[in-house]
Image (cartoon, rainbow over the protein chains, first blue to last red):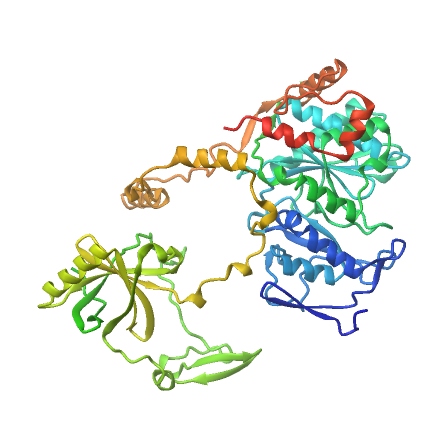
Length: 303
Length: 299
């Protein structure tokens, strides 16, 4: 048992007080704050490169996943002096580059980590394009996999590589790495939109490109609108605030195909333990998203 | 020749060689001044009090050390001067060590030592003796008001002096996160390949080979501007966007390829498992990826 005054820990040269370690944050799973901190600690090597330099939006659940939560863009005032921050559009965000800051966030019950597609220093210049595939019931992860494979096929015929991760909930997110300086959201957003609208035209019965909830029933939304400097997407390896401590987990296209074929969303659902085992076994499957350099194609005017 | 920064003597044992210290480097940074864009006036810096907004003359500026938030203790120039190391005017060599034992991370600034009047002979003797023994003198001396650790070594026709960091000024590697541990030990085969790659790139170090191209470009720009030529800023990236594509055609091609039961052409050329069982296996073990990666051509 930890005392209410908390426990003093040292991470490198940094001192940190961890509070309420026994507090259960996922009641159905009996998953405590100590386990949340332990998860982020063990995932840090794979996770930190994906947070590096990006202004972070916190999603905090001080009393657990079934109690009120709040988004926090402004980096908390009472932060330790060594937590890095960056000002973007008048808001001072946390920028997490190191283990101690990550543990500090976990201690704030910041279960979910949300990041934009660009870094604080080049905020208008995304280094990735994302397609957030979000199903409307009764459609689910299996249908997202089918749409993901369509996207992958499209990009393959454009000789581009793309990578998939689960949202940690019911969706799938497909990332197109760019890592080419000079690309702006004015390039990526219309591109993503054109792709989404094309898929919708080709698969009217199963795909929508419009955000409106009522249109989504039984279909998959190909959400292109997150390619925007003011939007964030859940970071790879972030925990999700669901009943179980599930993780936004990178998956291979073979796994996406298998899930679509077996029609079993369970194949692509990973909790904190499974996510850590995968990283231990296979390393960071999402590393190419930060490394691969690709040029965003220009679109020919419609015929 | 520039003025010496310091003069004194190198001393060890009973030997005393009077020398002058000159800077050995002249970094060639392009320096800019701050100007007002409207009228081109130079921007001045004024020291202004945060409380009354008045400009404060130097004689009313004291040094303050923040002991806790908003609380300062002040010290005067005289109080600090009492602790200044005594300007001993001598570089006291304490040890002679092998050059390769000093990691370059310790080196700070580089200087040349030149013999002072009448010291040419003992200077030449010291230079030659150090060359023959292959040793470097390590000692301490006081420059201005700071005590420095320094290495004195023979370099061509002169003795070079490098000021060095003290051990506690170098960041301990234990403070770094993410350094590979024993779990990242490379396999012999990988190591062999990496060694071959390194060997194939091995060359003699030729410092003249490397140029500061950024500085050259900036200087060229400034020269043109000074001559009154019109300058148009060039885009940073030659072309951030790729070629023009037709999405519809690309999708059609991809769908046609899928119908034929074959993946369309892309970077990853490999057969995927066709049976349900093989597919289910790969679902839990994304190892196929690692293999494909190994096969992909580099460069």
